Length: 370
Ligand SMILES: [Zn+2]
Image (cartoon, rainbow, N blue to C red; front, side, top):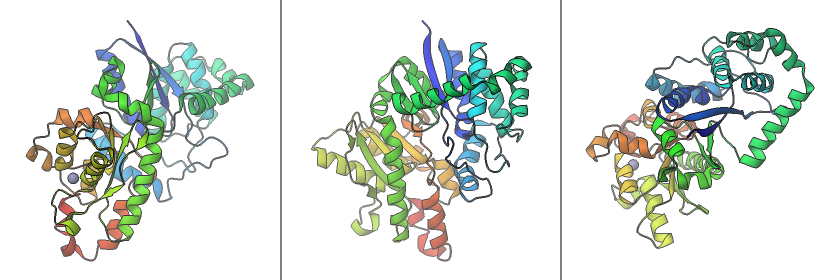
């Protein structure tokens, strides 16, 4: 039986492009019908981002490029400034879907923007891209001029935000269940199969983004006060169920008091339970092997990270050897891990480096743990 999977994307979001290979693999492995759905991250009149400002180069350096290298995908930060709006490209997505080429068209738009540095907000570029997947030029031109299609794009955007509850892209919806982030092929397969791992996550998906943003802000404050750039927090079906944990190794002389373990212990204590089954660990930087061990031993259902371990390593905290040391297999890790990039995700690391660059010796030790 064919399962329908809706994928909410914005054409200016690199993570939506990077997740395409996982979607392809899903299509190889399962009988799925993919429907690309529009979600404008910055609809008019919200200003779009500019590549010469701080934010884009930082998130690309911290997250996009490391992830692309790992996936073997070619991508570069487009130079178009300010970044294009995507409403017009989405208007033509309607036409593409009517002709059964929605996915091919979307992929071609991503490639035009992220591989060929083309301005996908311009009519001529959109027409070119649409023609490249077999659409008729006059049809595309007519679609771009159609007020009806403009209205439909508005309605689709409202539907994604208000009815589906999409707050981040890429987001995936199957059978009413919603998951967000750069999911791996295995995670997409589990979502489609309706297996347990995504259940707790889907209950709270719209909230997770807000929790991650709050965790990052807590983390920035902690770094400004001299702390390490890691915060962990546990989320249950009803919302946050722990404090925003920070590293307490020095104060407590407990070598296990990493930010995430502090949060998980707090959740266990405050809930009076000995398992964290059904809960999600939200961490600003990917947890180390020790923290994964604790999470697995306490049946945490999913781990969401703003910045993964490879990107964290590029900021100077390389604990990648800790996974095998704690017996965490790649399968166990990928079964739990979800990427949830947020705007200021790299800020704690950037600040930490700014504050501590001149005292490397004092941090040699603390930098090996989170
Ligand atoms: Zn840790």
